[in-house]
Length: 309
Image (cartoon, rainbow, N blue to C red; front, top):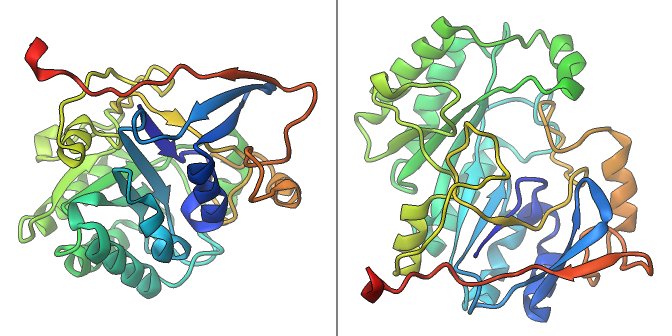
């Protein structure tokens, strides 16, 4: 199986101690997001975990702890955007995050650190010219430290409509997307970078930018060194091409303070959940309760026996 750590929160930045405690204890408890009393017990042992995919905007707190993952295969989806504090309130400076990106790449290999330029949004300050310049500058600085960039475009989730309107962030036009895409593609022509879109929601294949997979079968096979049997993740949107994984995060627990965040549904909830977090608990938020219904999640390696094909 593939473990996603996590689309729901930034575990490398805020909960690496908890995660590594889960690795040591060889399991994690994951509440159902729609029914928190239903809890899955997920094994975290190398014989069933083929690969771990980390999602983060700042893995710096985890860099000195990577030795504890020596028995596991993994890679990072590292979001690196050029926005100011009014968009991404609690992140280190761009220079510091680029330095962290380079240090991580030097440590684990550039093929295992994917750059995400995501989400792309526009207003008076962050217009298409801004993005064309910023993307080129970051790509130049990262071209020797990653092999791929994933492009994502802003989604106007219902619970952030008012916030986006307050910053005059509207729907991207086809003209804006195409203008930026052409520039981004021209930028990477002079680098070894590959450029993909995060989903098939916006089709840029005619511009030489195919739809990619964030949880990527080919990359997992490259990192593990063996073929896997898997399928599209049915729990993701139809426009998502990712293969199946088990996410161990919890919504409403991230403190990056991103204005566009889909994973925090109300400002007070992460603060409340931080008070309930215990690094020693098998759950990211709170302790096991008497009325929790805990069931073992069926887990197995996805490794495919090549002699059978």
